[in-house]
Length: 336
Image (cartoon, rainbow, N blue to C red; front, side, top):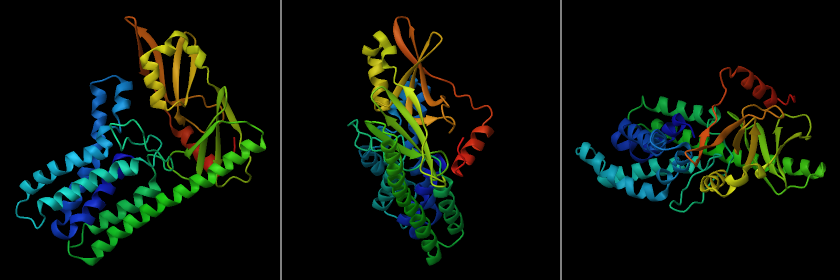
């Protein structure tokens, strides 16, 4: 999830753990704990884009990292606040839960997390977008209000519990919506007599009303959209040929194997003029119109000094207004 959401969740966890003993200090350090795992993005300043994406949500989002880091931070905070009511164990528990709930929340998004690092398996339920105001804003409001109450106030506890209950209930709702929309996509494929291998459905940006699905067929991927506000269940799919053969001799290169692992096999190859692009389908396209053909994550493949390299294709988002307008219309059931 986005940084603000992780800060809010961490703050709420901190308050639940130690708010009664140390007041707003618990909120502060819970928020910091909720931010720490995402510091892995700083590695992008030192390594290539593929390595950076492999590192992201890896070790820093694992159970192992939480177990190692929490006692260290617990000792540090007990040293900083030796006279507080909180013990070293209290601070350690706060930091562990603040760190651990970060990857747990991320596991509900499309990217997923390597909770069980060093094993490669990623936990990814794909039921909430990385930025979702309906999850974050009520939660944030509860945190902001409770900070003005005394640490021993019952109202403070109730507000924090309310924020946790609302946000957790919303997550459960999105899991239900994911199952419901999956059945819609599956039925539409059967109705259109389209043979398929697998379906991945997920919400579109900023909402859980409009859902999109990647559908794998034998030689192509299909992308379709379904809104809970649609007048009917008909779904139009855009077809994107896999074109894996365009890789040629590149197919045996270790870099391609890494990209395939990164995308979990959901990728297409595209040739534009003399350039070869590796498209990651997991995050869809910039836009919700058919054949948008502008993927959120796309890598240009090229040789440099005899070595195959990849660089991320720059996203053309100079004017985002049309994209938001398209999204809003499609959410409301207006089909292009």
